[in-house]
Image 1 (cartoon, one colour):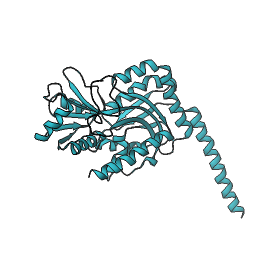
Image 2: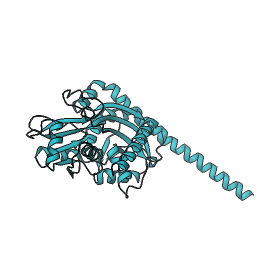
Image 3: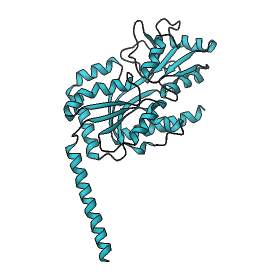
Amino acid sequence: MRKTCMILAVGFITLVVSGAYSDGIAADYPTRPVEIVCPNAPGGGMDFVLTLFKGPVEKILKQPIIFTFKPGAAGLTGTLYAKSLKPDGYSLLAASPSTFILPPLTRKTADYTLDDFTPILNLTTIPQAFCVPENSPYKTMRDLIEGAKTKKLQYSTHGAYTIAHIAMEALGKMAGFKAIHIPYKGAAAAMTAAIGGHVDMACSATTAFVGPGRLRLLAVASDHRLEGYPDVPTLKELGYPIYGQVYYSIWGPKGVPEEIVGTLADAYEKAFEQNREEITKIAKSQEHTILFLKNKELKKSFQEQHDFYKKFLAEYK
């Protein structure tokens, strides 16, 4: 009996000390640089969003934010790496539906669920953009669709079974054509391939490469036309109700303390409030909309998207 009581007492003391230690760490956080693992290559939409907030957030946290790029397997490489890191708030994961939601639905090696990570904050959202080289004979999306019915077109995305890939395949099924998918490592590489004429079309969640001598934007997969491109129709307007909105968010490994989650989310929101005009202007230049979804809201949104794509993939196999 005495031995049992002693074991229980030691266990209780350990828990109390452990809890106090954890609380102390959370209260002092951060005391060193914060790493964000990016499962995409540099130069794409995720890199843009992380960089957009980097400076202002560093000033609030008073610590550097370091990006670690680990592209590969449509985001799976970086996501699995981040899953293995300590949940101490110093190693985070940048995530989008393509890199985070789709791998478990399309790859047997993606042995994780949303529950294996801690949701922190969504930052921006942007629709998929369907682009062709400026010298392309296809001036409109209808032109491209009609051309694709008679000629096997090639299109690039930033990876197999990404939202861009699924959106394009869905368009082909709805419109009655089959195109050849050429995956690249990163949105920048996919768009550059189109600029160079290596593919007939590119699909990605970025308009950074649209402009004279580069790419022409034909359509977007969203509910509304983009503010910067009022003459470019949505796929829904053309009769193809395809979901293609991308959310750029930050997560941590499972078990990040609530206090640290709150500190990080508050830092990003405060950074935006202090630099609202500048951040909004830069975000809009690439057609990003600021959309903060904190913790449970973020988890709910990604779970709904997960359920949508799971059903979508089952129907389009």
